[in-house]
Length: 134
Image (cartoon, rainbow, N blue to C red):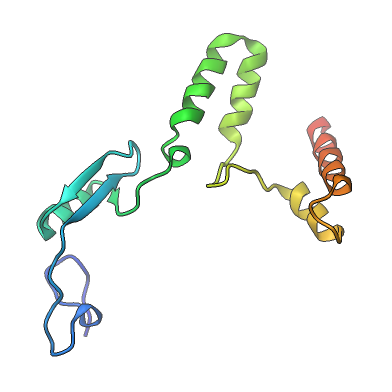
């Protein structure tokens, strides 16, 4: 029977052949908000960091929000026009590639055989323009 992880109970899937538990290896853990890395030399330190919200993967700059947030703050201070741009940037949900795949993108991609193409790009722009006027 497998019980909850992290409470000192052995997980049978983590065992080596012969019934021995794998030794803990020290590793880096990263704060998801700031991107700061901390070494977890023991299982106790690992569990403490995990409770604080640390993870195993180092966040990218977009996940940390570094450059995008700086740009947004600068635009908000500049003028009314730039404040609108800042609002648009905040609303975008950027993924690793930094691209936005909205409803217009998916609609056009489904309807064109050759994608990406100049015609498809024009169709996406046209669709987004229509949605902006409503």
